[in-house]
Length: 192
Image (cartoon, rainbow, N blue to C red; front, side, top):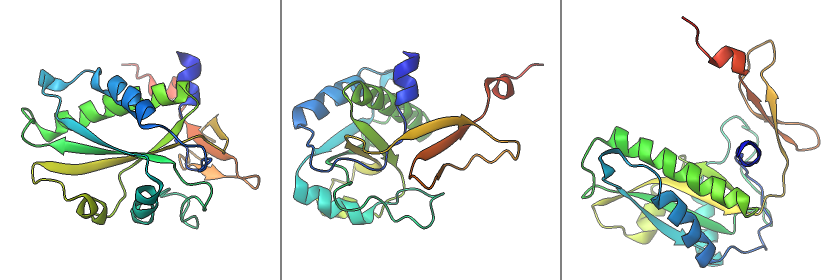
């Protein structure tokens, strides 16, 4: 379990030519579906996208990496080969939206762990244009809340301890290796 959690990072560069089947995406949604849900209301639905033209239509409307201000996202050939759009079904919402968001965190973590087990990386994207939703004409009860980009990673992501300056920002080095600073265990365990 520890190994798969360490491997399940946010990936932003993929082998665009290596496709992911809709059947594989359905297997990943099954993992999301089985996660816990507050009040068991299960308010999330998912749109699976594997079509190249649709992937290309979505790509320009996504924000990729807030800390990498000079990087506009993956270049052609390194873009995702699939997306999952996460839709909150307001008719199914029995509790608060806060509870629904908690559920989505659980669901997408299950999904991404299952993806990594298959060698597929992902990136949860909340920075997107509403034009994506306009493209699909969702009914009023559905709200696009999250986009998950998926593909076979072509980048290396390294976890490291936060430095003495306390900087939590991820960065890329000269070899384009993506570094993610993590707080040490000794700092996150609170002792009263």
